[in-house]
Each structure stands twice: as C-alpha cells, then as structure tokens.
Amino acid sequence: MAPDPLTLAHAFETWAFIAFGDHGPARLYGFTGWDVEQRRPLGLGDPHKIVSRAVPPAGLVALGYTVMGWCAPLPADGSAPACRPSLHPARRRMRTAVLVTGEGDLTSVVRYFDNGEIAVLRGGVGALPELLGALWARRPDRMRC
Image (cartoon, rainbow, N blue to C red; front, top):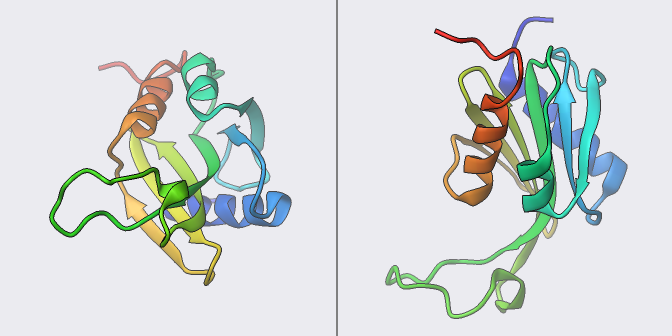
C-alpha cells in the first residue's frame, strides 16, 4: 500500500470509534505499515504519561494516538476560557486520533459525538502534539542527516 497519512489517520479514527465508542483511556500505537491492521500497542492510560514514557521500537512508519475529550467554544474576545471544556454549557464530546509520520508531520481526525461530524487537521499546537513529535523523533531508526 502506498504511503498516505490521511487515509491511515481516517482508518485509525474509524477503527478506534468502532472498538472503543465514546469512552476509554488514551491509547498509543505504532504502525509497521500503511494499513490500520498493521498496528501494535505501545501505551494505554493517562494521555500525557503514555506519550512521554513510551519508547517507540524500530521499524515504524507512523505513531497513532487516540484520546477522548471535551471541546468548547473559545470566548469571542480572545480571552482565556472561564472554565474547563468539560464544564462549559456548550461542551461537545469528541475523540481525537493523531498520526505522526515523516519528519514529525501530524494529521488529526476529530469526531464529534453529538452530530457525527468529522474534522481533519494538519499539524498541531499544544503540549500533546509537541510530546508526540518528540516521541517520534526518539525512535531508534529515525533518519539522520
């Protein structure tokens, strides 16, 4: 199968949705090929801990990470939110599946459970994307220039 991070990210999110629904802890996988069935578990549990403690094996083409969470609208004036997304009256339950490939490229697929909407995001900002990028860079067989 030809390398296609977007296709694998979609397949990974769909697999996680079917396997775990709208519950369960964060999960980290290593992919040895470009098919969702070519995954191996690398961690399960606290989102930050599994990413910061994992040691990726050699031979991976991608890392996959999936986690449940809440999102909520940001204040229109750009100020800091008044509460956590899980406490916001307009909160939405969602699952994020993130794939890290190549030189640390991130592709995220987000499923919103209230209406089934799926959003695809390229790149990532924040603590978890940074941890995933650092984890991907720690793999033993990464390309060196």
